[in-house]
Length: 173
Image (tube, rainbow, N blue to C red):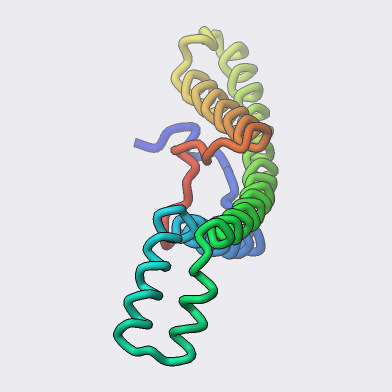
């Protein structure tokens, strides 16, 4: 069964925006992975690995790596700075992605709102109750959903919260 909202001409992201979102998603993934690798537990693991590598093969290269990782306080400070840098890059990436998605959702909401008004006017002219008309109800649900997603994106952009669950990119999309 085709519904009024499925007939609504809601355009997908443009090819340019889709490519940009995929690149931003890849960048986000890289920074998120690096942030996971820069935890305090990783500092200790790297120190132990450097010691084991030096003990197994006492080369200058392994000695240099051990020397770099020897001072726990300095290493934690370096990792903290690297973590913060990757966190800022991930935040910038997220902000750019949110801007693209927000613009697209705003366009979709505008199109859905115009279609809802047209459908309500049509229902009124035909003597149907617009609050109970199936097409109007579907369009109202669609506009409410789009509006909710826009508010969630705005909140995520302001607070730095994670993506709204329904808007997460899945690999291959």
